[in-house]
Length: 244
Ligand code: SAM
Image (cartoon, rainbow, N blue to C red; front, side, top):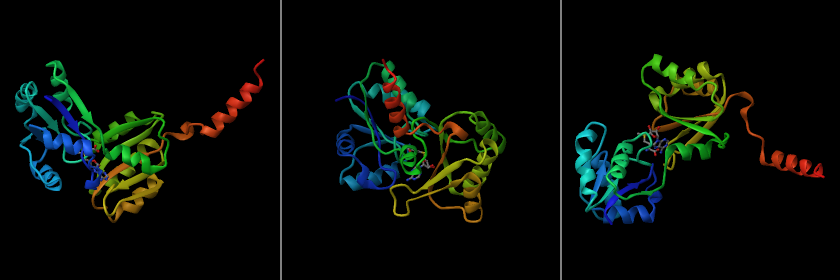
């Protein structure tokens, strides 16, 4: 059916492409892609191809109206190089304009590095703030960190290997030496999740910047750890005994 389909793709392991994602991709009239070489790899895995058109930060403004117009008659799928489109990737304006034009918008959810890292870290998940990539420039980076220092939530950052140690140090300075996790190469052969305090982790990676793709997960400030389910159950049971 015509409309816009937001299709999540694997963040490493091709086995994570869902059957529904495959079906939508194989039936799309056109697939809007970040990098056609990357998505060509996915189509190789599927053993078929569909027409692709680039949609990325540098051409989005100019190609968006044409893509939206096509949605009246055609099934337009949006993918990014890896994971969920729109999450530290292009797409939200395409969704906005598709809606404004009255087209059907459908999502095919799936892998997302930030969510996958949260499930590995062993830190509170009841409240989290997705921070995406911090600014590259030191001052802006420090400011972005200072801005969230009092937020009572687990923080999730995307980062690259060469910058990892410096970013961990800046986080320790700006947030205090909190517990954290570095999740790397999730769903790939060398997947790992290393936990420790921010200063411990900064030291660990100082001399040997790790390869691959990285998510940093940082615990909420001090006493913000939520009551456990057991505590809540006990409190409820105790409260019930006091009811008339
Ligand atoms: N849209 C993607 C998603 O849903 O996660 C994120 C795209 S963003 C441009 C790419 C960043 O995601 C990488 O720099 C890295 O921080 C993180 N990332 C992607 N794949 C990953 C993986 N397999 N393991 C760890 N981090 C990953």
